[in-house]
Length: 234
Image (cartoon, rainbow, N blue to C red; front, side):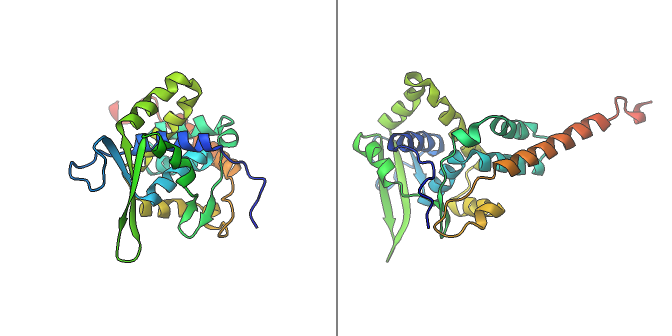
């Protein structure tokens, strides 16, 4: 049975978040892209990819956890740990979190209601690539007016700067990975993978903060144990 008390975003919040996410993630389209309106400035290919990117924007604790995973792969990039700390040292995981349901392919939420106002206002266009008996791929075309609005939103509403920062952080983190790759990556988190079908994926904020504490302690310990003078130099 679904939790009816779960925190939900408004339709306006969903639309703005998706516009900013598509603006951040859109790739330049080939000049011969089928179905693209003439005013297209970029395209996001694949509903699965858009859903997975949106999950990390909507769940800052999972985003911070992924940043720490990347830091463990390359501890020299301390910016990754700093970004995770920026999220977890604040109230962001509580104030910005909008849970998603777990479906067959992981986190999922119907996008049509949130995308409809963007399409109606000429900010976005979307189409489907059809196979023999099913939709092969969804494509989301960012139009010139959509990019203009996305880039001007923060000027009109400075509070939206958080969404710009986080959507860009998420896109930079995935570095062009496709939807299937992102799905497998998110399933590596036990709480995510163990969520029953049709239930909301739970918060991991407490566990992520403990992981951050351990990583910071290890980083400090390594820094303190480094010799001030290289013994080989004497």
